[in-house]
Length: 290
Length: 275
Image (cartoon, chains in turn purple, green):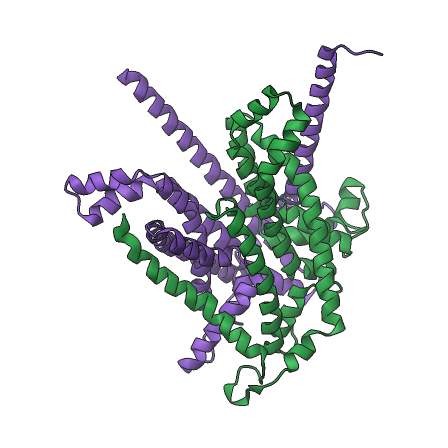
């Protein structure tokens, strides 16, 4: 059968869309099926999770009765918040510093900045473990590992992400803008806070978001530097896995995770709505002015 | 803006204290024999080297490379087309699709790993609820599958980042010059996107090869990768700690990472594909 070029194009176009659909479907399935199961399990009355035993909210109540788990969740949240705030501020300042360096020094700074980003988490954890232990020996405190070493470790691995998200924005900033601010009477400090930082705010926000995600979900590094007494959610879960293969801890973990996912989706949706509205208002304003 | 040069110095010192100094500590430790970390028991020794190049650890090492390599290959096979498709979507859809890829990361990684593994059990939730009985929980294939599911977004993002930056006029020029779609892809798009692929390979392969939670949770300790050995040697797996061996293995991994870092600094000096 001879096909006209037009028909041929149509058929190729069709297989293309099927292929596209196929690939996107695979990815969505791979990424979301486990999460769907987690959500279903968190409402599952069957404790072992081997079958669906009816709908229950029991795990959401029990979750808050488990002292160790509540403590672990509190640690996860407070560390994530503190690490995010501190690393966003320090990372933004570091990025501004790096941006004002010349070629060779700038490259060197970026190279060392990328070490924790690329380094295997175990290796980062092991190195931090040794430096903390070493400092502990120097100051005569054998039990230095705990909440504070965990916080320092989180700040350490979050800053590079902030730097990486702020730097491209700094690159885009018109250098004359800063000079103009100085010429118009800004002190270097007000030029920094009123001109430079607002113009890189989207980068700072991205960095903040990344830092929070990294810290909130971290396991390996915390596990190595938090010592035996302090644990975050991931460490609590891993410890439970080690104690016994199938444990009573699972349903509570599922419930906690469902709460977190719902919050994450809500925040992202709200953020998008606000961003969209802002954009619309901007467009309206520009139309009015015309 | 040269005024702010000074901000870089404290950061440099901080990074040196937390990356270079511990590396030196680990190097020194690798050449020692020591009880725990009691300095008075430390003495020079090459025993860590002897212990590290044991058969058991070499198997763990090749196993790590094999499983992580397979996971990386699958991530490219699935991730490249997906990144390509996303970059060809309309801008609004593109953004929401990227969000869709990002959202699963808010689910705790360990929980996802153990859930996926649970789904691969022959008896249990999948059989009783969906009537599907898979039977490869705890196998190497399960480890690879879990790695792919967890790290796939890390392959898609960097490839997408470079694809999005390709100047569309290059594609048009190629077509004007008589190349068909496939030729354009092979000779223009693909070469230009390779730096995203190399970032992606590094960002999938390294964490997979050094992961100790995935093999542990999936196989309950029967599959040991290099990360599991480190966990053991750091005294975290309920075993006696052996810090010199832990340090030496970490240093060996660090050497590989530095190689990767060198490649990245060649193809992507500003680290744009790392986010």
